[in-house]
Length: 440
Ligand code: EPU
Image 1 (cartoon, rainbow, N blue to C red):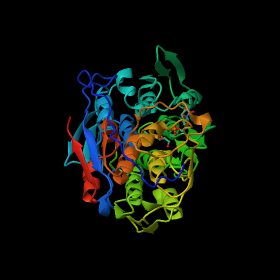
Image 2 (cartoon, helix red, strand yellow):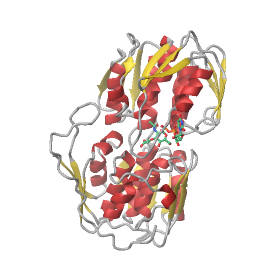
Image 3 (tube, rainbow, N blue to C red):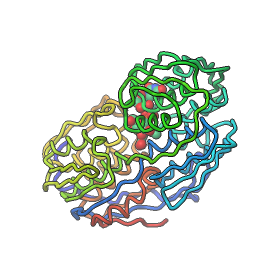
């Protein structure tokens, strides 16, 4: 990526929809709101981060494991969380939000059902019901999620793991159909580190007879949080936070309460927003140890970063130094911060390089950042990304680029943002950004 001092902005505008906007999937009306940003303001002040989306989603499905009432706090008000609750409602799980970020979940009358394509397609994390359903009911019927905006995202590791625990798994008309008389503990060595497969198999092994060992387990903070939650439900798990998890199944786990961990990707996005504008921002309600790799890169780029117990303060220079960024499993640099750093580095001095080792094709944002004037070259071996940005983190990258663009940027299709960032425009306004949501 070459330096690009004057990032010229053009209006990012998608063609107007010809019919009322609906998801291709559920037919549900989707918001066609836009976010309009007047670039050029340095962000200043404090901003709190919300609870973690990717920790909340598997924790919610874990309520299928033990009938009863759960109370969760610091639950982010996000579309993906509502989608998960909608999915769980199909299994008879009731939920009620209380004072914004507290959530009651009642799985007393949970029953088995199908996780339909229409929902699974809108949110891949729906696959997290597979493990708990199999563990609790001995049977699960979950749609395959299908492709994703930035390429194939297989679920073979989830399936292989369930088979090793004793389930018979077949693919029938696009559905994963898994059955077992009982699940038995097994040795599960993963050839690739997978967050989803680790989470799903943790939950499947929770009620299995005997001991399960997951080797090369994902040790992302969201998996650590799920494992801690399962522990509080009475399931014995050793090695939490490491790449080797040992689960001793228990036939009767019990409900538990939990507070969701802070969203490290939301936090990282605000740190990047501060850095891209040459700002001075303290991101609060964070768990700093979850952000070591991001902080390290910001420092390497020339930002002054002060890490406190629950907050991170960044003071950025006018222009950042170039970086080499390579994503890798935790504690490496997260793939979910790759797009935001691409925006950042497109206005840094000199040439930076970014390599995504988790998703080789996760570059849908490149073409849109180029439309804002960024000088980015994708290695031909990685090309083939669709031209339209259709991803949550890609949308965040466009917002960041808009914060430093020299005229107004309009980012459309922001329903992707609403899946994973709670009130991002209000939070950025609080830091002095000229950003607003324009209702369609
Ligand atoms: N993989 C396989 N087979 C599998 C599962 C994964 O080959 O059965 C591969 C994937 O294709 C990828 C790698 O393993 O190359 C890692 O994928 P992983 O399973 O870890 O990803 P995930 O569980 O589907 C979660 C997050 C993503 C995040 C990735 C990587 C949730 C709900 N999603 O996805 O978050 O990018 O881990 O950290 O936790 C987002 O929030 O925007 C997002 C996409």
